[in-house]
Image 1 (cartoon, rainbow, N blue to C red):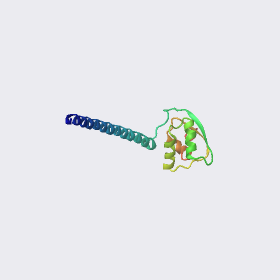
Image 2 (cartoon, one colour):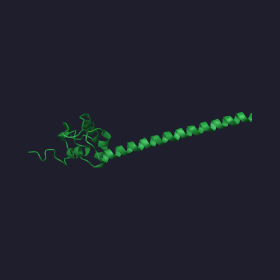
Image 3 (cartoon, helix red, strand yellow):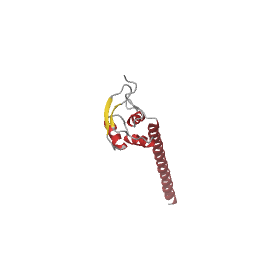
Image 4 (spheres, rainbow, N blue to C red):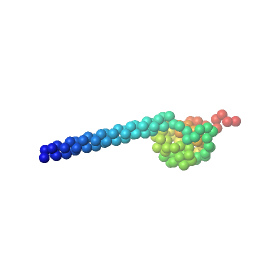
Length: 130
């Protein structure tokens, strides 16, 4: 009888080890995936990319008096000017942007930082045009 019970305990120990290896492997995969997503998210905040390359597509957006960064981000996303509302809102808060009401012509070739500069009045989209 001792032979059968020791065989069962060895099988149980082996099964426990396999389960631990699988759990640790799954945790490592999740951590690696999370780290990659976190890096991509942070990179987009500080090194934004445009939705499309030059020449881009011009889109008209109107910013009303008192519109929040979230409302503006929704309008920009709906017009295909940004891909991620949350990143835009974080950038607006990080760079302490004060939006100026008005109607703007923006391009899909502009990154979110350039769009923030235009919507804050720091850059005039008409500059350089004659």
